[in-house]
Image (spheres, one colour):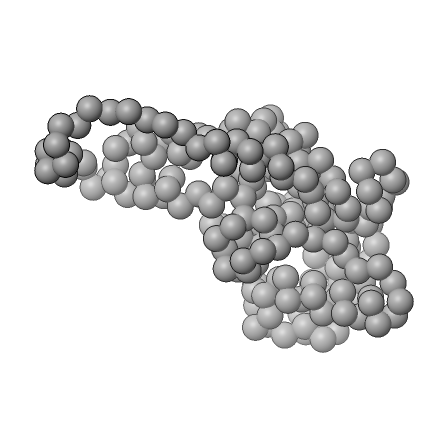
Length: 188
């Protein structure tokens, strides 16, 4: 599969940045998006050039650290999928793909596609405390929750704290991520 990558490259937060174009001929449809970037980085290192900086950790769609903009969409075209879960079969041969870092004030640029998530992570780590009097444990389990509400609450509970909602929102406030958790708890 042949792809053209337009990748935002920037040495640091105060350095000038711009798009660099890379032609990729050794991409298979079974590769994950991050594996494709690994192949690019191996090539760049082999040529004595600086690899593209991007964050990742679990590569299983759990941690949310792999986020960046793909063709103007947080995590790319596949809804409900982290960048690490996106596979190259989602693209056609000959496609041009544009990669940019999250562009929200809460995610200052570190380098290339890597952003500083520390402020966002501190909000998540602080968690929340909710006190509700439900009676004894058996009583809590007897409170009927309509199926539609339970389904919506499960959708909200699927949030992995990746920050894509903050990066995609024109208002881009770091507090916005809490809306998924508040929606979940409100429905229950």
